[in-house]
Length: 318
Image (cartoon, rainbow, N blue to C red; front, side, top):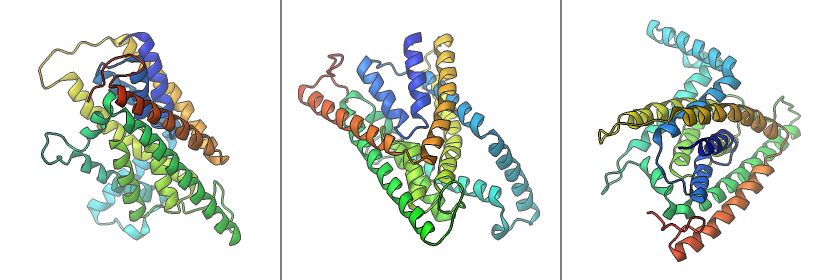
């Protein structure tokens, strides 16, 4: 891993992890174009830690409140004082985040007839021979964002007709169990297909359930935080202690540089996404993912016909 690759991938990870354009899809596109075929799992883990730092930086006050609420809720559960119907908004958010994370365990279900788990499909689809999946997934992201935008506008009209005005947009601000499960399953599906935006698809899932768009975005980012931590721990173990027992060689300067850039760019990306959503400019991402998705789809069809990567001339890997 050289410094140039670290900088490029750090910028891409920081921007696309939170903007609804898919970080995994864009990292795959970058690696495909520049022929970056090395499987640097440790570097990937550190990039995710960088983006985790960005989330904490933006939501540090809310995260502190939720951690406090979680501790008090655990205490009430063990002392018999906990009552579901009397949860305040912080406890409700904590409970809905926990419920929303449960579907992620589905990713560890074995695929019959193979030695793979469902989560391993993401690695398979990232190979150059499956480049067409990236194009289809980006087009899917564009369609989902369009549906979410239309639903949000419809919800706003209904609230205006009823004479209900809200700060931060129309819609419910409190999640229920069905909302949390729906968003959790959506996040699970997004994790399988590089090119389907996690933040975008979970935002849309909430909007389709009638949730306020700003509340939906906050929930989406917070829901991704434990998932990033879990992925970093699991992948970090595999990266530092591989099954083949080989000694891991790490070039720390590019790794640290990529992590820092991912954190700084990610912080700006979250702020940008919140502003664009607030000012009803989601069409930027709808158009962008549609154009890039169509371009990748076209390129991938040409590559499948010729059997080689048109950027590097290397044979496609399946």
